Amino acid sequence: MRKTIPGIIVASILASVFAASAADPSLIDAVRRRDQRLVAALLKTKVDVNIRRGDGSTALSWAVFQGESAIAEMLLQAGANVNTRTDDGESPVSLAAANGDPKLIGLFLEAGGDPNGVKWDGESVLMTAVGAKCLECVRLLIAKGATVDGTDADAGQTALMWAAADGFAAAVDLLIRSGASVNKASKGGFTPLVFAAIQNDAQSIRLLQSAGAQVDAKLPNGLTPLAVAISYGNVTAASALIDAGADPAVNAGRSGYTPLHMAAAAGSLDLVRTLIARHVDLNARSAPAAGGAANAPDRLPTLGEATPLLLAAQNNRVDVMRELIHAGANPALKASDGTTLLAAAASSGQLEAVQCAYEFDNDVKVKITGGGRAGAARAGRTGANSQAPAGGETLVSLAVAAAHRGVPEQRICDTLRWLAAKGAPLNEVRRAFGGSAGSTALSLASQGGYTEIAGVLQKLIEGSTAKPE
Image (cartoon, rainbow, N blue to C red; front, side, top):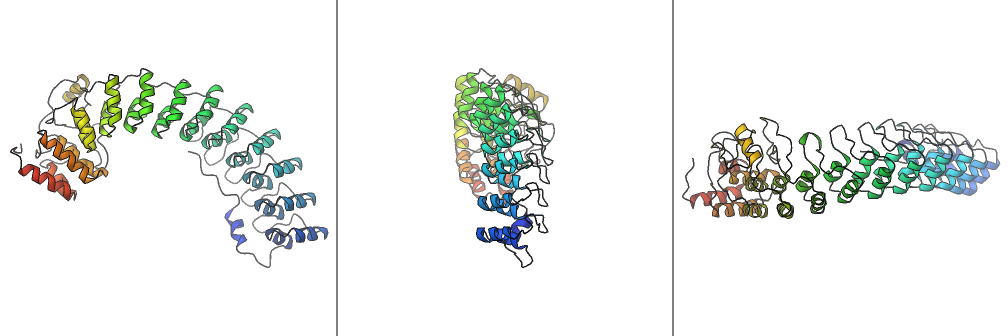
C-alpha cells in the first residue's frame, strides 16, 4: 500500500519551533514569531532575504510552513528564492502544496518555482498536492509542467496511485486526462486500480477502467483487484469492478479461492448475491491443501478443495450458507480431507452454523482425517458417503479447538451440549492433524486451560453411555 504522507516539514525544523535561540537570524526569527511589522521593517534595511539556518530553512520556508501568506508574499517581492530547499528537500512550492494553498503555489510557479521538485525520498510536489487533496494545486502544477508519472524512490508510486489511494476521484480524473499511466505498477505490484479497490472508491474505478486499466491484472501474489476489494470487505468496489468487466470467477492466488469463496468466508451477503446473479460456479473448488502441514491452533483448518459453502460454514456465515444452498450450492460436497458441511460448521464453534448445517447434513459421527488422503479426497470430490479412517477429528474436538481462535467458551459449550443431544461422540481418541495420538476433546480442553469447556464436556461424558474407541 502507499506510504503515509510525510509531515509538512522535517523534524529538525519542527523541533526548532520549541528551541529558538539568540543565534537565529533576526529575519527568520521575526517570521517564526509571525511579526509582520517587524518583517516589513527588516526588509527595508536590505537584510539578506535568503539567509539560511543550519537545517537549510529560510524565512520564506518558515512563512509558508506557518501559513503566513501575507508574509510569504512580502518575502517573495523582496527577492526570496522560491527554489531554496531545506535539508530534506522541502521547497516553498512543496510546503505550499502540503498546505493546500493554490494562491501561493501560483505565485511561486510564476516566480520560477520548480513544479518537479522532490524531497529526499522522491516524493514529488505533485504527490504532495494530491495528498493535501488540493485539486487546484494539482491543476497549477500540471499546467506548469509537473511530470504526472514520476515515482517516489521509496515505493515506486505515482501521483495517480496516491490519488486513488486517497479516494480523490477528481484528481484521478485530472491526472488521467493529463496523460498519467493507468496501468503503471508500484514496486509492490500495485496499480492505481488496486489502490482504488482498497479505498472502496467506485468512481475512481470507473474512471480508471474507462481509461484502459486492466481490471484483471494480477499482483505478484496472484490476487486481482476484485480479490483485493473482497479481502477488504469492500462491496461497493467489488461490484464496480464486476460491472467494469472483472472476471467474477477468476482464481485468486495460491489458495485457488474465487471471489465467491472470499465473499462467502467474509460473510459479504450482498456481494454473494451479486456473484450468484453473475452465474458463477457455486460449487467451485479451492486449491488442494498443502500436504502434511498441521494448522496452527489459533487458525481455522485449511480446507483443500473447499467449496464456498464449506468456507461460509467454517466462518459461521449462516445467512450466506442459506443463500448459497437456496441458489443451488451442493451441501453434500466435502473438502479433500473429508470435511463435511457439518464438520466445517463445527470447526467454527458456533451453534448457529452447526444448526444450519445439520438441516442438510446430519452425520454427527463423521471423523476428519486431515492430510488430504486420496480416499478422503475422492469422497470430497464426489460427495460419496465414505467413512474416513478411525481416530480422526470429531465434531466435538473441532468445536473445542475453536477456543484457540477466541470463540467464547460459553458459545462453544452451547454447541457441545447441542451436539451431545444429537448423539455426537464425545470422548473418541484423536489421531489427526489437530492433536497427538491418544488425545481426546476433553484433554484438548484441559491442556488449553479452557476450564468451562472441560467441565461441560466432563459432565456430558459422565452422563452418556458411549465408550471411547
